[in-house]
Length: 386
Image (cartoon, rainbow, N blue to C red):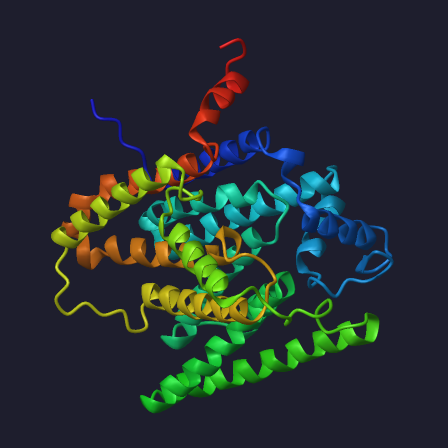
């Protein structure tokens, strides 16, 4: 007798799978998934919890916006957990929330798109703002789809999510840039209603961004935490680092250095899957227009271009998994949305199993040690006295 699970059961299984990976992953990362910026988030969350305001090192925290620390403080206030564990819960609850929204949006297809969220599990282990930021971006994309296709939608919901993206990471301001570009596009294509709405939203967001930076100047000593646009590395090293960052991000099965053998095995697997899909599907007349998949690609593409440009003029961080993940996840969602579309049903049945297996493998292969010789160490931690 063949065992069949409902789409909702599959979605719940994904939620349990991601929870297990995150909880187990915490056992193997140093310092419980905390890095220097993690401690800054936690210190500011502690100040908020204590009623001292958004403080860091005794003054207003202009280095990062208050969103992520505020979420941590809220979960800490709501539940009897430490600030550290509240930060992990924020990340986990964000993933749960997105799975629920996918269920409401895609119905029986939700587990297909939900399989892409395993890509976030490695990031969610750490006390970083990126997991929450990416989840909010996906919700922004879904709101854009509703507004640009004239579905019943609330502009306040869109504005709230867009401001939330900015308040979690300053890079969230790129949503405003996306709207400005879209306004020009819609106007040129005589889609006047979409152009007018996009312009109104852009203007409103720009005012909000300006007000927050004004608060930074009033309460702190700078717009965004000091000088960010300073001299970068020599151009060859800079371009090489950017190219390597994008190359590594293309190989979603493995985020590792080029001397990692599993990285190259992952590349071969990925290319083989791409070739198989390309041969199965019919690409004649393919168009994305204002589909959800098209909007994921648009928003992810604008983000990728802006973050790459900023890295060219500012040495703020290496262009790696943390910075490029929004583009990657939105690209994965776009691919799964289009591949599993009801219009592609007969093709999807042929590629469904290998595609879903590929996405289920993403969190597993990324959580493996950076060097393969550490595998024995990992197994010894799981099975003592091996």
